[in-house]
Length: 407
Image (cartoon, rainbow, N blue to C red; front, side, top):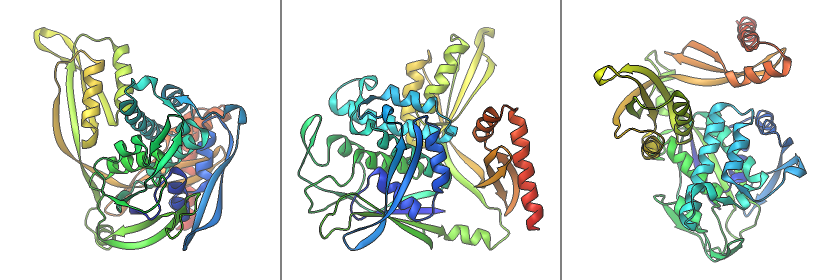
């Protein structure tokens, strides 16, 4: 699956979510369950029909959070701790944390303050936190490639807690470095810092952000809050089935996903295991796809640990930064390697304990792997007071039952 964004009126977090819902990229109930795992109340997503300019679409807002938890000023560390303590799936948690760190690094650079001292203003409010988590959820669930049209920029000035600043705000401009832009005759902000951060995350997933040939399967429109006169304040999400997917489905040739990643490796013989555990967390925060530690014998018979990291090419610099900052190494080897992966999809099954997501792996069109999501099983097992393995088996049994009923 491939998804393309056309930013007619700009991009904000709520617009990205609304367009995804309108195009059927995610289920509202599943996302609400994820948001509730943040421990901020019985969060609800409220979609409503709206028209901006000449185009109608969907507008969303959030309701029903705990008012005592509301604040529009939070340090990055507070937000990351909230994510760590949540029941979000690991991939969603890491991606949401990465997005906040991306925005934090931009703010740190603009205001010349250390990252740990960055104080989020509007982006620290609960609805902005929900925007980031929702975007991370959508990106993890769809497992799609992404492309975008030109990024529209407004002009004028904006009143903020930092005073009067130009539109787009400095953090947004920093985040949009390298993106193709187009000017709109509007004296306002069109792409918010949240929207610019989401665009950076799309570029991490699909570095070229190029649209491949394919067949349109669905589309959706997410509306902004304001009317912009003759400009329709919407973002359009178009879902494609690519030509390569169509060919693979119509033939017996193997359908494996192939991508290129960096493998970064170093050996250490003078660090304690506790410090290496912290290192692993920092590497995942920096965008690592996988981290493996293994014992090795080094020169002069010293026992050491080899740390091997897989990462997207665009995360190489941040991974190396963490490696040199948090270890005693003086060097690391970087190789470009090719990964071959099963074609993957997510399914949901209902068990006596609740809904569980299953990761389905196919090769040559045949299912060869079925794996319940561990985070779902762990959460439901904790709620029911049973072993994780019991929920795991129940999820597999539920899918087997569904398969028998369909055959």
